[in-house]
Amino acid sequence: MMEIVLVVVVIIAIVIAFFLRNTGRVEQARAGLPIDARVVYSDTGAWERVEKALFSRRYRLTGKPDYVVQGETGAMIPVEVKPNRTARQPRHSDTMQLMAYGILVEEKFGTRPAFGLLKYRDEVFQIAFTEELRAEFFEILAEMRAARRAKNVARSHEDPVKCRYCGYREECEERLG
Ligand code: SF4
Image (cartoon, protein in one colour):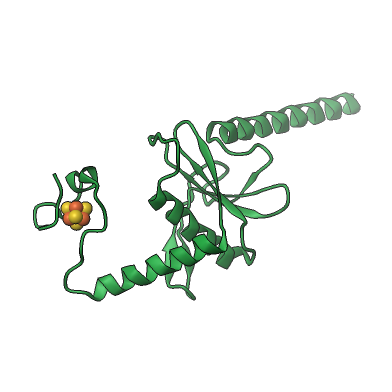
């Protein structure tokens, strides 16, 4: 009798484990992430959003990727999800944001990720963290820091939509539209 109970308990445990594993995979697929990747940085459990920002003292940089997953090779991969965005190409600003997360992930885990994933509503873009992209990111970072010290900063874009939803629109002399 004891053996039967033990077998039943083991079977139930296997069924629960299988269910949990598949639930995770469904969530993973829904988020548009590779099935062979697993979440390694999440405060609130698998496929919940990361709650705490990552921080780099060396670069004075902070940011919060939606996920950090570990691929089959063991590499840590930052993931940014923009569920309402549709585009055939990744936006440059999103690419730069992901590059920042790549640097933060490198600082936290000690290994430089080769790429990050940018998930739009219908597409997942794999963004390679090339030396050129990294250099461009640090250039922009330096410009932003210099701009913070400047009295006036010229508009850096030609996008009226950005201005329409900007919180400084009323005071800004360079607004578009
Ligand atoms: S309104 Fe001014 S500050 Fe806002 S996005 Fe446009 S140019 Fe930039």
